[in-house]
Image 1 (cartoon, rainbow, N blue to C red):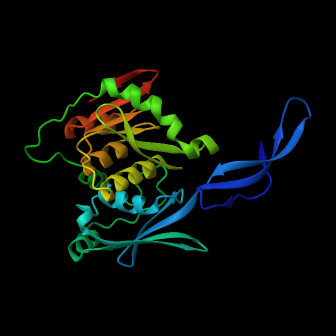
Image 2 (cartoon, rainbow, N blue to C red; image 1 turned 30 degrees about the vertical axis):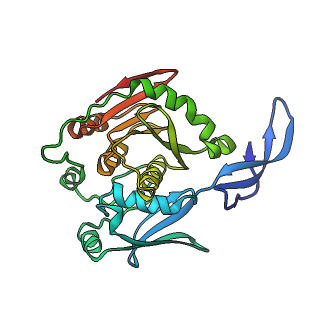
Length: 272
């Protein structure tokens, strides 16, 4: 399948392209195809731009809130004074107004970051700075080794039917919120797995849901950053359809997060 015309983004998180499908032999067929929308999205705090990431331009208020919480820029949604999504010719900006205390903290810890669909180290200048940025368990916090094994299979069986963008495009990740019984109540999708998780965290916060009562279910691998985001957001469990990394396992063990990988066909591997 070869793209012949640039995709036209739409408000539905997808773009439409004219393609040529090549079959066996010399057969060729012109048709329209649907691809996931990917645009530069800037997060701007009190007028100061902090990060530009490549994201699917849906649920961007959730993305702004979730990123702020999962990166420690906001300690709670109460520090957010307002949020507005602005569309422009160069991309999309999410304008966040935060409290003076949060903004002062933001300026003290500000890192210049680049696109966030993969690497989470952009802007970290040294190995020591990287280790300092890792989440630490709160003093005296008990290890929260809640076992969700019985619910994981139920949650992953229900997830595909709720992945609307994935069904249309085959090109995006999903992050969903599961109750301890395996019932999914929130699903967010994005071209980037980190963005999908941030959107889920933001949606939980904006809805006033307690992140301590459930687990995040993701259609991706479990990198260290996915685990870090869950710990900072107060989520006690993360279940991934693919593999974890060594650093993700170590951080989950240190932080008391229940981590599951290879959640497929009714089975799962518990790493922490």
